[in-house]
Image 1 (cartoon, rainbow, N blue to C red):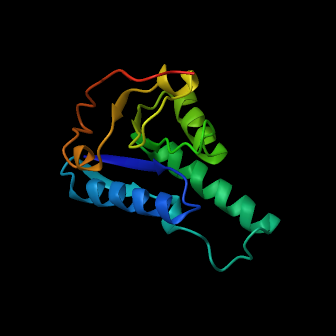
Image 2: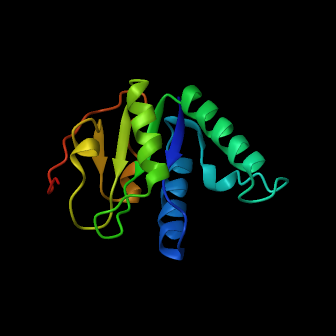
Image 3: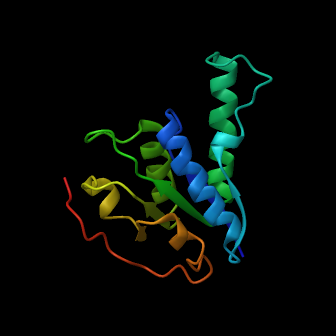
Length: 146
């Protein structure tokens, strides 16, 4: 069973609803031991936006990226712009040679810096409930690239 890091934006109601669909699917997946969702770890005991808060969030998220077997990255574009925090997490996972499972519900393309190294691409949350995180089957992005 796998430990998963869930990277994705959570700045709007739409993004939070998408994130919650993905979390629900990962919870149902029998090959997922556990997952870490930064959304669920806001470190509320520290002042939001402070240097101490930012340093603690960064350290915790980086630690969780290190311990994960794979990363699920929600590529939720607003126009052609991905959330920079999510992009950093996906790049960091790639530097560790961890498989990145890219989740994209919305129509449109993916930046080549995500489409090329992505290990697998999933378009519906319910498909994450049955994806085999032990075997990690590969798939290629079949949509537009920019």
